[in-house]
Length: 109
Image (cartoon, rainbow, N blue to C red; front, top):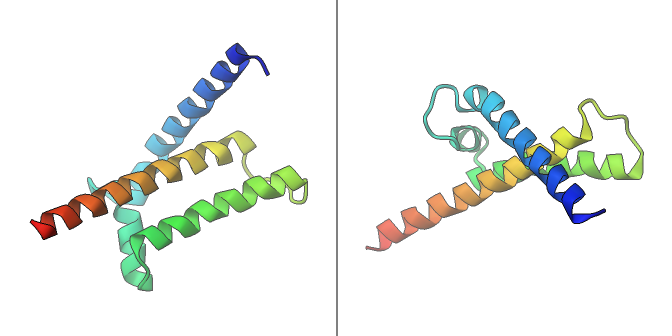
């Protein structure tokens, strides 16, 4: 793949990721301004950490991508959307870790 093709592909993938995040966020946050609210709420219900809940959601996408690569299972959504959503989960995980780090720093001061 040529560099210009790669740039076009990644630009499209990131645009799809942003579109998915924007479309799904209201349902996941249930009106909360906290974009991580879903993971915290599910964590409270399941007695898992928000990070662990997020990992489980992320792994669902990785399993789907792996199944697509193996050609094992028909997909219920386009593979580009699975990759795009996997990117979203990585971004959310990064945000969650940065939030936790900031809270730890505040607690230490």
